[in-house]
Amino acid sequence: MWAVARRPRWIAALVLSLAIAGGFAALGQWQLARSFEAAAPRDEQTEVVVPLDDVSQPQRFVPDSATGQLVTVRADFVVGDYTVLSDRINLAAPGYWVVGHAVVPNGASLAVALGWAATTDAAAEAIRSLEQSPPDGTLTGRYLPTESPQESDFEHGVRSSMAVPELINLWTEAPAGVYGGYLILDDAPAGLELIDAPAPITEVSLNLLNVFYAVEWVIFAGFAIFLWYRLVKDAWEEENAAEAGAEATVE
Image (cartoon, rainbow, N blue to C red; front, side, top):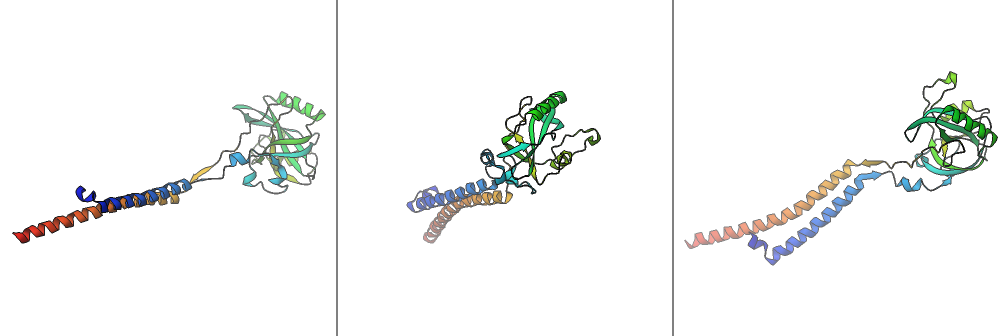
């Protein structure tokens, strides 16, 4: 059979089969690459600082595209509206967040996490400094959607969730409008440590339908080679049958 396969006709057929199989294999690889659907390379997009109003508006839900985005905004802090949140982990260490109430030029309010403190005394001391010298001006940091309210000891003023609706109830005046997310400053004021706010992780999901298509293309590539083998074998069997028939006729 291999003597038949080495004939120019079948060598040319083999080259054609390999070319077809290669095309099918390339399609399978392309289909497999499409099966991993990433939510866009947001790790690059979120690290470009943009104006806050370009990604989020007051009185609206925070869109997914704005989650974790580095933003900048001009704002002034409201004296007396600083809050301490407990049970906040920062680089594996439990501690406290100091949160402020900032107002942007359009009159809307924005919750701002200014920094982390290891103890309540350090947080209280930082608030006293902030009351005397608030970090007004241009604020830059990472923008995140509000957290869900958690069960806390509200009666004793203990809170642990960065929940914007809860913070509104603590502010001295009802805001004219409020952003649905909060800002984590990228430069902590004196007396506080920078809150660890890494870039969001790109989510990757597997599209099983595309994986199935990729497997199909691989099967087609193997079938192209098998078809060549089957045709060569058929030609060899026909020649053997013809030779056997000729010998039987002579006898």
